[in-house]
Image 1 (cartoon, rainbow, N blue to C red):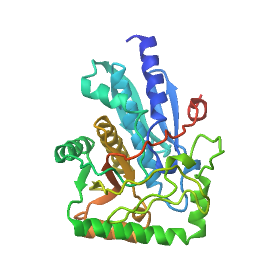
Image 2: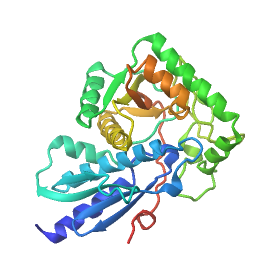
Image 3: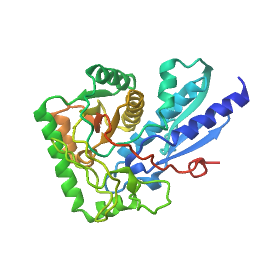
Length: 325
């Protein structure tokens, strides 16, 4: 195995993993490259202690970074060999990825790799352009490849229920001072130079409501922050990602499935808007599990559609901050 080629592949994979989606753009990961292997660790200092006390969203975020590593290593010509949760005595070590057999990446893998930095999180309604049913079916197969189920919410009554739960969770969280302070930690003023969190240009100042209405996080909090636009009103396709279990392995799988779905959707001109508020309230999440998910555990709620406005590229921490020597 060519040592120089392997090092290039590992470096490219870590560089790309920085662009994975994460809750509030917390980027809660640390990487370490040793020989032919990458360690993926959870940065627990970036955990949301109020809204994510179990670390579920943190681990899902890291799972998205793991799928990015796998994809880029394949683009670089190596089949990744992954070990999940390899050391019980090091709970923050979520996975190791080793450069395995040399391969030739196919066109689909290269297409996914090409979307890693182009993918954007959307925080408003969508243009009135339907997401094709065959694309939703394809996204379901991508999620299934990671051991996760993607379920479209097609019945209007069910969509109304999910929207109502999102509104309820948002309303309760907005009255919780601890939650508000935690959210403000990851909100970025227009003049901020920080390279994490949600910048003021990453969401519209006044977003038009969807029907049913899915509220967005209030990152501006009493400020006139936000970008112009946000007039798209279409709901898009509402989907859930669910798993049969609810441990760290399933959370990692949900993150990998999420990134697989997002990259494939982006390659077809489709963006995602996330609505995790109800999943951060245990009793609302349990209601969803029992009443709409057939007993499966909901891990992600999102809308898919064609963005009506340009979405600003989010900031990312420099490699020096996420790479452990």
